[in-house]
Image (cartoon, rainbow, N blue to C red; front, side):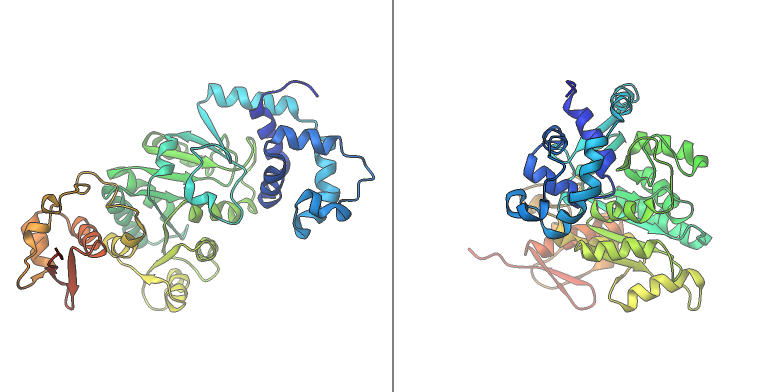
Length: 383
């Protein structure tokens, strides 16, 4: 076999198995690297009976069946090596990062899902994928109100140090990206190759996102935005995130697919209510009836998501001191008596979203307690 870099083998492996990430993961668990997969499968005798050697191959029955026919043939007959070598050169010249499944910078949350992508192609700052992410998705034919809500939630989450993830579609997605870029970073996950901007009219938006965050695709370069790519793309939007916010969705909206993925992945699902009887409210109201968390603004999300954070919010402007007395709100909260939320906001000079996030962290840490009516007081620490 011709001497090639491991990245070329990764891109070839990816071209064969992009649509079958579970099979790809099983092969990597067995052979460790794509070059070893090629070396083993292309040398496999044509009369090899995979079904008799399942224990030797350590593959589950559902993986074994497709592997015994189409996939082995695909590896044996693969003839796009020059295209893969060209892709490597393009990645170098166009500053495209290829984050493979074994790369230490592969986003940790998405690695936990059942079918993580073989690799991710990223344009922009790939470091934002390591931060706490919240997804905001919704209707393409969104109302003006829906777009305003998505913009405001995206902006306020970004202000608190969260990275906003969406799909760069018309309507809610675009509004969420714009809002996030007002205060922080955002990630757009594409249903096409990283070199195929879709919608094409969002080329300027894509450039802005690349500067304020990054563009992400799991599809090989040159992949057109075929409609069947987008449900597959949606599992990445939810997989990158601690939670998914749905802002406006029709009864058959693609956003509901993202919500379903989020539930399967153990992520929180948030839904913004809309007017009774409205077409764009049907999907969100259905989610709310099914147990999604009711949200109207960013602080509702922050309150719910705070217990999932491994440490106080990533935004070091407000959090991070080991000394409780240095925390920005603690001096406003008494040991004896109580203080109302509105009073804390007024006295601290912080935004309501900032206050709600810090209060949630302090409650989780056992420093303060919340009483009915949004009242708070300090807890006396045991000696």
